[in-house]
Length: 406
Image (cartoon, rainbow, N blue to C red; front, side):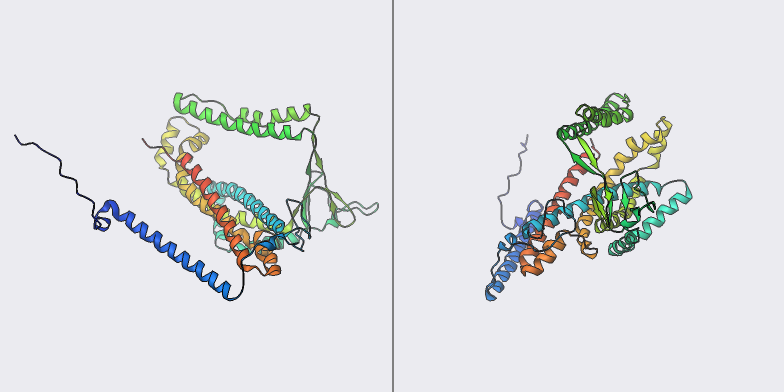
């Protein structure tokens, strides 16, 4: 009998870094990394050398100097005597505000339009197709200017002011909302003692709805038992918060805007530049999201829809239990790119005078201090951080909704 023995293991040789497929990929990645490090080092060294030749020293001391300019809309207290750092913070918050609003609105609009594009109603499907083709094929800057122009033709605040016995030309919508060519005025919340408890109960209610839906899904998948979620979710959303609100004596009030001599006083002002930028980014990006939603739904085999209907599932459950879980793996990846584009396209805010981070730090502050390199480096760091954060969060969500294969 002949004994079968394993072949002796070959000792490692340098030629294996190229010839052996186990190491070839790592070798090329290492070479690329070394070249990238040398390229970055060369650029940094070239920058430092040129700055030394011109007698320029990188310094961020200018961030502590008074800014000397006003900002039309702020989320935190700010005056012209605040520092450039404070102005930069205001710009960052304004950028995050418009990015969040546009992402949320574009998602709702895109999902709505994408589903309606597949409607069996010919007129609705064609109208959605016209919306998609019209908005995504025109530059977003044009839409920003168009919507800003439309907002300017709204009535002036004086139209809401009565003169003597003459009634006002316009009345506040729902008794507290006014649309003017300067801004949209809405009631602002007034936080009294105990308002934090009401907000905490509201957040806990939202968390309870989330866990209820997860429980219902688990019961359906594991035991085939349908747990009602619609009316319980509505009850959890409203009842606990309203109960605590009245038990604590209505700690949250409303500051309704009132018309003065030339303008409104009180309430919350949503300035015209924010409205123009918000709506333009929403309708523009929503057209792209609509196509992603349509593609994701069409990627699911029609046979699965027919089989689900044959089993007696209603159209709503077919969409939520069969189509969407599979369509999300097609929809989510391009959605990440659209959210990143919204954040970066918000830098076009300077076209309508909205004070985002590009207009404050990369615009007025840069021109006043002459610190171009420092300002641009901070801008790059901000957009890089925000982009990586959005990408990381969306990738985590993408991994949570992808199909789990056996």
